[in-house]
Length: 150
Image (cartoon, rainbow, N blue to C red; front, side, top):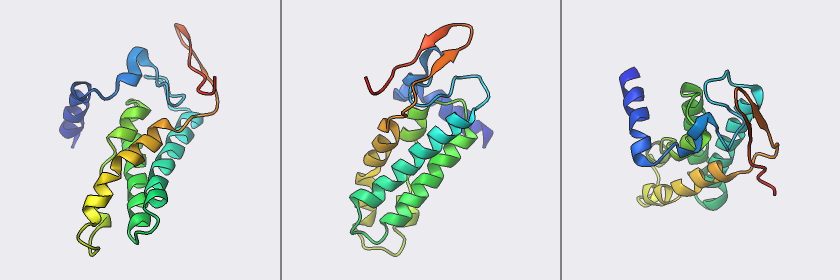
């Protein structure tokens, strides 16, 4: 399991994922790299995972399996964030495991296709949801982080 995680993390830069954490900053949540996770960081990531999960329920509200897919996406996202605290929020949102196969068990034949087509919506919702509190990283170097509302 550990070797899979290491291999996965080594592949992320090649996939263009994780660029948001350059210079040790996570521009999507107040989670400075290499520091203990604050409650604000954990809450921010949890909210983003919930938003991504709700995307399935919002865009696929007429599908019976959408609620299950949304719940599974949210759980997968939270697990990824918990198991990999040092990767950036964008990476968490964009590499969360697909809930489509377990959510589509016993559903119509087009379920997996429709579910897979909506994975990007869940990832984008998770990644782009604005965290409303501008924050400042007060470490060795003082860096002002962007205010998403200006």
